Length: 111
Length: 114
Image (cartoon, rainbow over the protein chains, first blue to last red):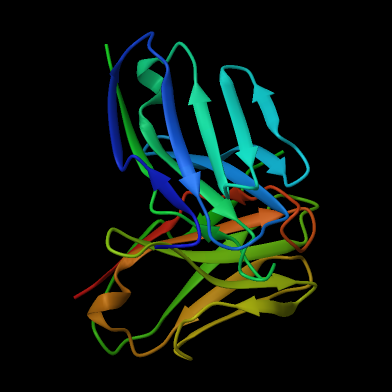
């Protein structure tokens, strides 16, 4: 598996529901970032969480980090059709040399 | 502030040719990174430039090269194009070098090699 690997690969929910996607990684990290990519706005940074943080919020987004399990989760509450996108986690786990992106979770929010 | 801009947005080239892609970072950003995105391999790091110096390089052949100018603008070059080089090439800028800063991505250049 890759350094950052999202799960599930694809997720389909109804508008208004919550969406949770997970990211697992293999080596220790200093920080982990979540990005969103859709055809309209390209790849956009969502949240950066550092290794000494356990949880961060930004609007309807909540990110948790569990360094003991080497995993992170991204929760989107009250999802909207505009949240339809691919979501990637990126870690600095390549000995801090560069970001490593996971393959992404494709989220579809149905109206 | 204007975002990261990349030119051209679309490009069609023939095998064996070479191509140069351009990236203008957000004003004040000094680090520029390049990524290749394909359906099969996902987002893969190509290289990072800071203060006109290449800081890191991903696992790509020497046909892939880049440079950064004094105004932080960056170019990447791919020589002797292969069909497998068809991809979306993304440029990202950040305030400083290193991985503590969020990256701002451009819209990408869609390269098709025939």
